[in-house]
Image 1 (cartoon, rainbow, N blue to C red):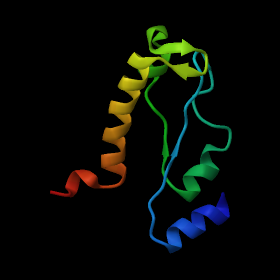
Image 2 (image 1 turned 90 degrees about the horizontal axis):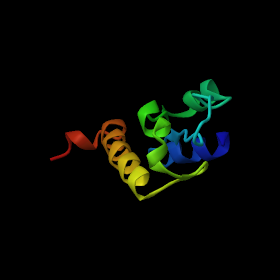
Image 3 (image 1 turned 90 degrees about the vertical axis):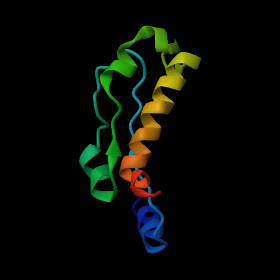
Length: 88
């Protein structure tokens, strides 16, 4: 990942990491969060998305409702992180 991150930076390509725990996980951030954050922003979605059982098809996959909620939230995060909200 270090090599990939360096290559993306050299080519001026923005990137970030997104942590997606499975349903019911008590782990709120990845094991190496500090390492990821040293490379680029680490995005951790809010608990309300993951804790609502009606958002899940199974322990590892959102259903249509959950994927819609997550996608809308993620789109807003991308706009902020990539400064797309500043472009008119």
